[in-house]
Image (cartoon, rainbow, N blue to C red):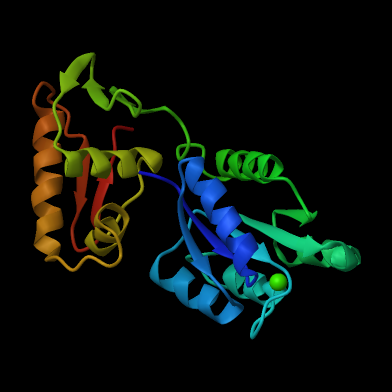
Length: 228
Ligand code: CA
């Protein structure tokens, strides 16, 4: 799954440039043109990282930052703040409010993508790795292969995405709603039982040559990949 970046920038030309360069780096990029829109989007489709302009119409970047930090689902999402040179004296305030990093305009795209990569790696180690592992399960994201205990596990595309998500947070219990959002996307309306079907297939494939169930079902809560 591609990491999801939300770019909050009201200057169209810069927003387009950011989007182009970040997509080229392999990220899924969504764009909000003002602070209000950004807050709405964060609730609907939680990003893995936010590139946030300081000066925004309606709700300022600093206020967006404050609100994101105040919500449980977005509290830990890394934020890179973009400021103009004249605003640089305020940067400390920006970091106090919860931004993880900042860039002073004008900045180079190489610098931005390097900062994004570093911040993602720090906050979500599993997100950008070529290989994920938990217990005796190993996923090679580049070759698109999965092995358990050294034996190849054949997975369909949906099961592969599900496992990828589980491997990013081993041991954590996810509701079916959460899995649906993460794997199928927030705009897809399918029956929650579809999630059960695919988790069932994933479980069957993973457990084919093993006596230890890799997936834990938590009644009325959801599922977890758990081999600890
Ligand atoms: Ca601006």
